Length: 154
Image (cartoon, rainbow, N blue to C red; front, side):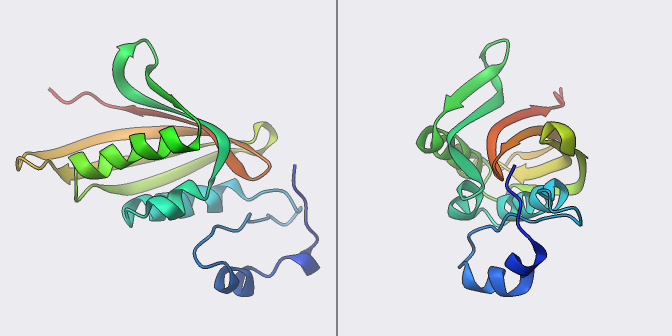
């Protein structure tokens, strides 16, 4: 786990120096602040900013999406493939928004869950709304796995 002393971490000036590259946030004990990271990830998704989103992910990341022909849905491995898969979300629902977000953390396991309500309109004009959640696993301050689930609306 990455640990920095408080003298090495100045959240305000570090953000200003990073040009939207996320900073590893630390809690009072010097451990990664997963809750802040999940909040920033949600903000990046709502901004539809793929560069900012992908800055949170490790090079060897894995994304599992709910739909697919396998029990786990669709799996994408590696940063480039994950980016391409996430881009389809913004293409299919150009106004997609993740609202009512809540974040839950297990710091010991370097995991977190973001719960949200997805809203958006397809290119054909159909309005979508579904509740869902993402299970995140972190290593060295980066997302190594994002496993997405959502309710099926019939």
